[in-house]
Length: 249
Image 1 (cartoon, rainbow, N blue to C red):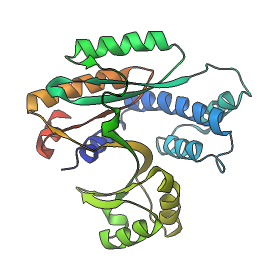
Image 2 (image 1 turned 180 degrees about the horizontal axis):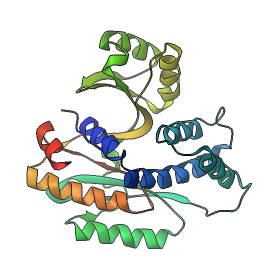
Image 3 (image 1 turned 120 degrees about the horizontal axis):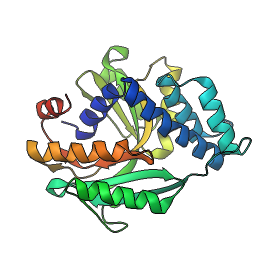
């Protein structure tokens, strides 16, 4: 199975709850603010902002929240200044974890992240200790009912995608970061609707773990993702589909 695919699918389902949606709103408000600060407030000329807005809308974030986040980023209204950084470490079973954060207080966040790792049987590592395992990729998820795999393969690869594969109810398109927007545009031009589209990281090496270890890793990941400053968590573990589904209930 694709460890990233199964985990991502489960997280999308979990995000349907009000509490999870509120957490996602907070994360994407930060992402929109940061994207607007670095690339300007015009989504047409700022691909990162365009992707963040698209995802926020898919979560039913109100338009006025999006607009305020953009204005905070461009400096039109006052607000916190967020700094992006990442932490690297290990979880139960020797699994590598990469944690991306956006914070207005790096010292506070570093202490909190270290505490979460320690509390859940993990440990922080040095900069560069695991980040090399996680390669930047564009990831576009499409319902199988939207397009056949063969048609999607031809369309996506022609637009610059690296790979297309199917898992469960969906197709996944992987792209180099530089081709992400071109592939998205090609799909939209041909009327292929997407479930989600994001710039992410995919583990180049996945570590098989036991069900008990997977349970401990998911507790660690959940604790990290519950922190207000944590934007994304990547882990390179893999378990059978049925085990992942059972643990996610």
